[in-house]
Image 1 (cartoon, rainbow, N blue to C red):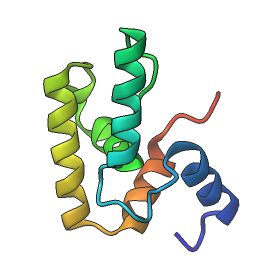
Image 2: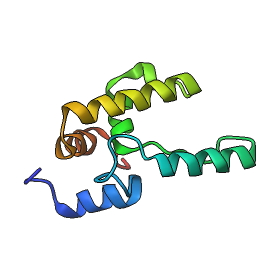
Image 3: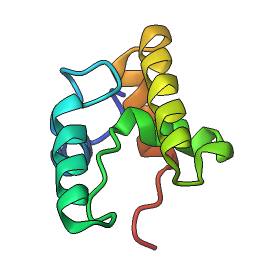
Length: 102
């Protein structure tokens, strides 16, 4: 992590997961907000995946399908990820594996 530009770290957290450093894999507030907006719209208009959940999705293709069951399994896997790895490791995996534009 000491080789990663701090601006990338700041950007990732600000844009993708504002409460990354505080939660343990699931941002319950963001999840509730997304569920409310989706229920009002009667369709999927907002997601609430944390960086932790995105790392799980990157490493486990069986979570690529967007169903309630896979979303719950993804959340449980993100909780386990946080039990076994620290936030710097999780963020570094995300930075090294997510697609940035081109």
